[in-house]
Image: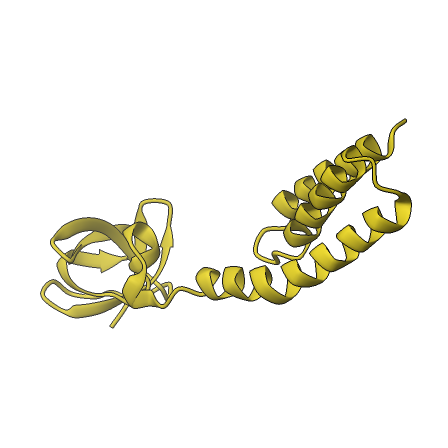
Length: 142
């Protein structure tokens, strides 16, 4: 098996590992470095040049790309959109909330809601905070 094929298999395995471990962004830069080694091997360079491309690519990827990706994954709540923006948002109870349900208005949208703490009832008109989203239901507390 040619060297470039071995590096290509390694790159694919590392990329698959990155997809399987969401949020770490460790194997992705190493997979890109293996891709660089594929190019170096396909160009006909020897094993030492391939290893240098892999090591330097891994180091650069981990030192440059990983911090950028981790910063992006930690987006502040103000910049979040859609369902990800709801935890921490304030809303108003439209229909009494208890363990069986109820409704709230958050940012002009109506959501089904349950209390975050079981056994608590929240009356209509009360301001609440969305703690968590489960499916299409907001878990809220006063």
